[in-house]
Length: 82
Image (cartoon, rainbow, N blue to C red; front, top):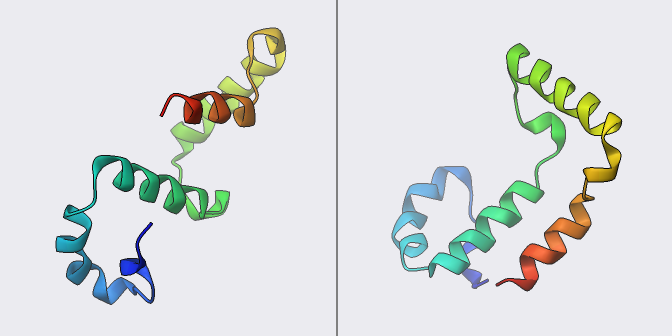
């Protein structure tokens, strides 16, 4: 990733827009991934309905563990496709 993001602050985000638009789609996706992975689980607000759905899916995956793929394995497979 280029150095255009070094020292960027939220107040300067609008100034970054033209530079972000010059990034390739792959670079923008990499940036999105880096930003997403930098968040803590408590940084992402979820509604009660979303929490209930997440809990339901977690319970289902625990019961059906044989069909599950660990996130690290899936991420590795997806990165190999690039």
